[in-house]
Length: 423
Image (cartoon, rainbow, N blue to C red; front, side):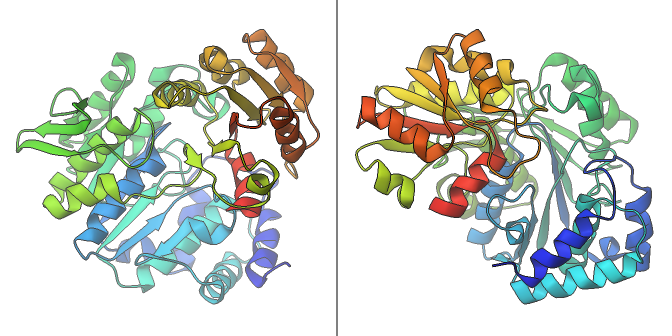
C-alpha cells in the first residue's frame, strides 16, 4: 500500500527531468527558503568515498551510541524503505515526521526545478536541525564537491574512504579526477581521515588538504589497521588498540574499521566506543546472511547471502570474503544496472563460483537485461544462464545442489528488492 510519504516522493521525482544533475545552486536556493537549516546542525562528520562509506558510518555510529551519544545519520540509497535514509537521534524517521518534512520542503521549493536527491537531502538537513543530537553522520550521495550534502562550512571531521573507478560519466575518467571530486568535502581547518588510497588518488587528496590547511590523518602514515592472530590491531600516535575482528564480514572491513577508529580517536572517544564500533555495527546488504523469508523457505538447506556491491572494487572485496568462508560450492545470482562496469565486477569472482544465474532487476528501468549480464559473466570466465526471477534462479541452483552457498549480488537495487521480501 502506498504511504503518504511515498506519494510526496513520487511528486518530487517529477521536479527534474534527470535523476542526477550535479550542481549546488538548487540546493542553496531551497535551503535559503527553509531558513538555512545546515547552519543549525550538531557537529557534522561528512563521509565520501567510492566503497566503504556506509560500513564506516555504521561503525562510527555504533561507537558513539555506545558512549551514550545521540546520533543523526543520513545515507543513500535506501534498500527497502525511504525512511532508512534519515535516522534521527538513533531512530529511523517516523512516517508522520517524514511526511510533514517532505510536505514542507515541497511547498518551500515552489515548483522550481530540483532533483529528487537534492530536495530529500534538504528535508533530512531540516529534520536534523530540529531534533536535538550530539552528532550528524552525513554520507555523500555521489562524488563530493557538487553533492547535495556538501553544504557544511565547518564540519567537525571529514572522512574519505577508499576511492576507485565508478560513476565516470559524472565524476571523471581517471582515479585522480574522481579523487578530486571526493576531496571537495575537505574544509578549511577540519581534520580529514583518509582510508587506504592508490598513490594518484592520495596525491590529489593531500593537495586539496594542503590548500585549505586541513590536517590529514591518513592510512599507512598516521594510522594502521591490520588483522593479527584473529584480532584487529589498530595503531596510531596515541597507541595500540587490540580489538575483536569486525562483526561485518570480509577482510575489507578491517580498513573500514580503521577509518572509523581513527575518527573516534579524533572525537575523543574511549574504549567503550572502540569495542562497540567493531562489534555492534549493523549495515544491511554487505555480505549479509539471509536467515528468514520466502527465499529461505524455498531453499532451506542452502546458505544464502546478499551483497549490494556493484563495481570492480566491490567484486574484489566479495571475492576476498568468499575466500575466508568455509569451502562450499558457491553460486551467484546477479542483476546489475546498465551504468556499471559489469566485467570489472565479475572478473574477481570468476575463480569463486560454480556458475551464475543472471536476472533483470525487478521494477528498475535502468536494469541490464539478464541476457547481457549472463554474456558478461561468460566473458569474465563464469558459466552463466538466465532466469526470470531470483526465486526461479534459486530453485534451479538448489535442484543441482540443495546445500549450495548462493550469493545474490550486483546491485543495491536488487538487494533492496530482496530485503523488502526477505528482510
